[in-house]
Length: 329
Image (cartoon, rainbow, N blue to C red; front, side, top):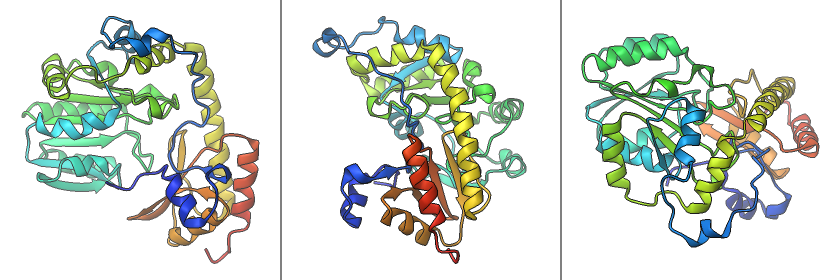
């Protein structure tokens, strides 16, 4: 398996610190999760069925009914390469590692997360695969630019696949509402913004033909009854969503300022995490881990990703650990 954030048990064992004593900032999952209400008994007792309102709630939230519920984005990430043709696949570097891993066996090209680099690669690309905002760099592109790239690709049978896992906190540049167009795929999930990673709920937004083929491969009952119940309720809770977007923007600015003040470098990222390049990233990660704080380290380029602390105690703990960093680090 590829390396991911959230491997807290492994860190606890490695550093000899009990699980309960860790501050886990390694995942980019909203620490202020949507408050899950009690789940009705029949959601556990009966097989899940369409027509329970989940698809309608998702259509209202994403602005399109061209969607298929799936058990988080991962099944789609692994299955789409079997359904989308094209030898030349362009991905960002760095980016979420599961995407290039799923397309191994094709001709993969990694380009910088910059509009000019993508523009240059478009004309000899069959599949452009973007995480938007990018993970971990946070790079974003305008909706008009994304649609232009899609049009250039689709005109000659190419595809644009966009993973919008981190876009919910500021969805202004989302392509969700455009997914009736041919050769466009958008992935969304409830794991990050809603903080419901354990529910494993996602959606593939794309044309009916591709959705039907994907559904055939994934089989029935991809989402459990309890997951469907919780997801439906979260998607219609507009008051929580609006308040959370404001809160996350404030906390992202606070985290960026804290990291800037620590001397680690200039942070970048969406509302749910901040990313800093640092030549001594392994030493910084180790220093924080010895204080019971888990952050995500990347080797290429050497860098660190920090999620948001869950409370004031977490903020104070992170600030103290950063203040104690050896200045040489």
